[in-house]
Image (cartoon, rainbow, N blue to C red; front, side):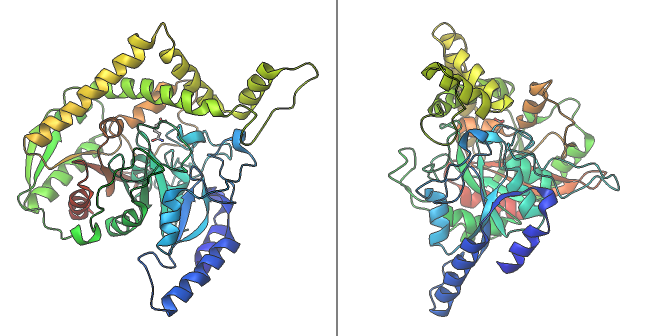
Length: 456
Ligand code: GLN
């Protein structure tokens, strides 16, 4: 813990930690020492972690990287962070992210973006660590902590993991409690670990999962021993390669990486087969209707009365002015865009044309996966991202769709509620890390981690 705290202090330039909690960390580390001395050392005893700013942490600022939550210190602990503490983990501080987890580059954060510790060859251009869990990815990649929590609504664990050469898994929807995680799009949001390798992800995920009556979508299934699943034996497994994930204009390196992944799995005794997920091309548009719709509803609670900030009002201002001014000042541009899109697609006149249609498309996307799993496929291999990390400022606000395209390989997994993992699998010509994604059957995270274990 002490060496992580020192590393964090010397890495302010990465802007990964937005609230440091050294006193708490040292106190938790001391308690962990005592547990070890007493012969009661759970799996994460004394392991220093970073927690994404989206998790409510008791008495510690939890702002979802938004100005509207300035000054908010929750009076309770999220279930996932509490589970980690119960397993002995130590919290080093809160990690940077895109505002309310909306973004793919960490550039929508009210704290300014986190920076990727990697560089393109000798070029000094600062690169994005990805988003929204960009601070988590940057901190793990730069050895500022041994692991970090992330959340993934449309790829926010897997894309930053791929951009920084680390491992990140989004478990099946319902595996981790969402209680105390500041909501973005409730039917898509899931927490997961971001770690240096697959084994660490297995151990950390184990501690994070639990059935929680406080989240009605948390499922009361036994949590298997994920680490014990890491045998490296995938003989007889069938791995599907979906043709729709091959994009025209995708860099050769991504294709080569994908081919190498297929070969590694085949060499380990898996059967690699071509499959089709025909509705894939509708996933991004459906996601960018459903996610903003749910966000517009979830973010209605930030009204200047409850939580955090209220704008300074002028004489004569009424309640409407209070809402307007508070939300205009407190929310950044991307969040405002999502609230407007969401409100529009849910409005009486457009509900059927947009929101309901997107929900139907979502059902078809899920059915595509159900069909290939029913036909005997055990896991699906795809690239995690269509490119390596891009430069900060390279994708500007002028064209938000360009940024949304980053999520082309990841959003399907959230729409279908499936587990997905990104593992570092190679580098591009400039030495930047690239990730492969494996998508698994619901509740089969153990198998998924084991297949990923073969790839790392
Ligand atoms: N980049 C996606 C978005 O902006 C995904 C975000 C996430 O998974 N939290 O919606």
